[in-house]
Length: 75
Image (cartoon, rainbow, N blue to C red; front, side):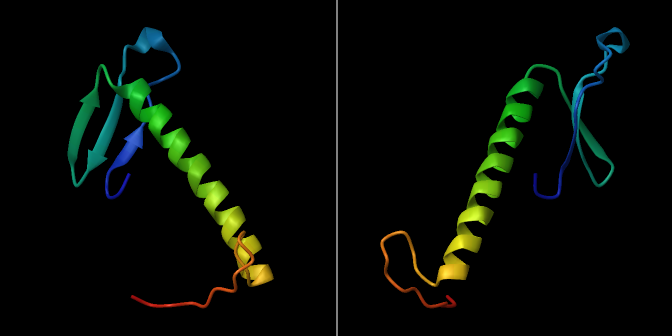
């Protein structure tokens, strides 16, 4: 999550610890939004994996799904 580190809640709910975000000695306890952040991170990871797979396929073939040859460009 950028410069912030996400620490999930303890699986042992008896400990009563919530998930937290950490950055440069600061900590934000996620009392109510932990499950939303966890779901978001799972979705972002899935998108990233899919992007990597598709990028490798395009790089290997030199074409995009529309069969057009693409050239590297720098903006």
